Length: 245
Image (cartoon, rainbow, N blue to C red; front, top):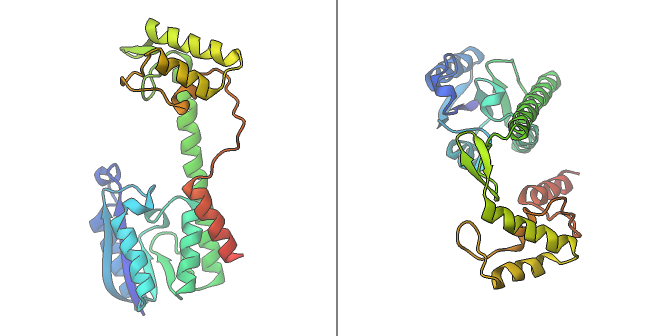
């Protein structure tokens, strides 16, 4: 059986012990030798987050090698080297299954060539997704706590200026915010409010003309009348679901 080893570390992980590129490569080689698998190539993504698949040149190369044929096994140090996103992992496993390629991991003993091995894979994918969402939830709550105490989180919102870690009202911008909300409460549409600001010569913080999206951010309790537009991920996921149904 011919195999490709895939290894990855993010920028943060490069300083940690035990998951370096060299360590992963050595463990994969040892696994391949133990299992009697011929390791024909090693693909790596160094200092790259697993969050954006298109940004990982090695990951894209891995997919290309699978589609080109001649590969029987993908060997990883651990499943999170591929991703912690459950949809990505399940979609990838389905793709590998279409090309009769097995997925093996050194750590966690995943081997998708058997039903038990697939169950182990699915459980690891679920646990990784849960951890990803927990981190996202904790981060969101921490940012909300900081905002509630007047601390700056991310970019400075319109109507304020930064003073150390605190936000101080910007009086000219606060006047614009009041005008926008008064017009909105008076029944004016977004396009009308945009036209009013631009006709009055009131520009954005960047010195440009206003757009409906920018004005909408200034309105307290804005309620849109249109449904949320489809994202690229939503469109691609819909296509994927229809294809595998």
